[in-house]
Length: 301
Image 1 (cartoon, rainbow, N blue to C red):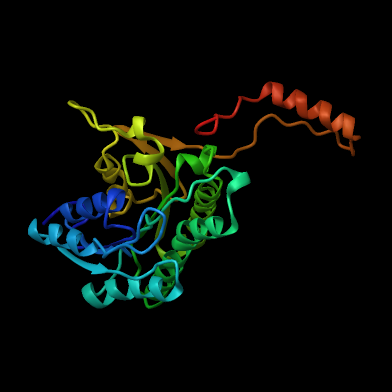
Image 2 (tube, rainbow, N blue to C red):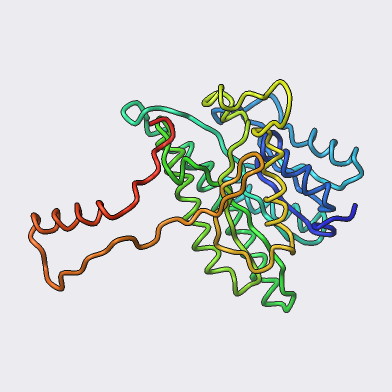
């Protein structure tokens, strides 16, 4: 197959279902050889009856593409390392890493226990860091050996990480952390030929169709704005050589809409040149807030 990812090798985590599956199929359709990672767990992270990664590999091969399954736990160092090793052993290289794996354990903060916090942060945030870290080490070695990579990392954040989401304190914190990780990785890895970006998608997946059932329901006819495949074209482009020069960016994408998210930047400011009293600090803060735009509301607020 020829396309904008022809001859590239792409690893996608959590690619057995939903967004990850859509990304894997879309990369393959554009000529990539795909490492399909999926642990095969349930919505809450508990072990399922079997990994769906092999089914996605079969779909790709049936369409004339190349793919291999990987069933390791990418939130462990050994599992993340084996993901990168699988790409290199099978296809001789790795060009793009798409970090997508995740699950939910939603609770209001007063009911959110430590295990639910740790499990979600582990898979979303640590499950981004470890594959990224092992891929970066591979690309650094390639660059030092004189084989300059044209490498790409696409991370998966969420509107919950950008604005917050009621009942999803663990998920929102992890997804906000992924944005910070993306910015640091983009700055640190540029010298090795690696671009790092993030997407904050809205689409129908196992995670969203239960939490936001009405909004995620498929229409009876017409454009299905919440179909996960709508997100994949941007991810594929970011994962291709065609995205040269684009790094350290966060894109929100839903249906046919793509938005560049601008993140934290300095707004109204005041400098007294001296220490304020608490009352003076409060007066200044209220004046600045009156001149600043209101933040977007958290989901579900």
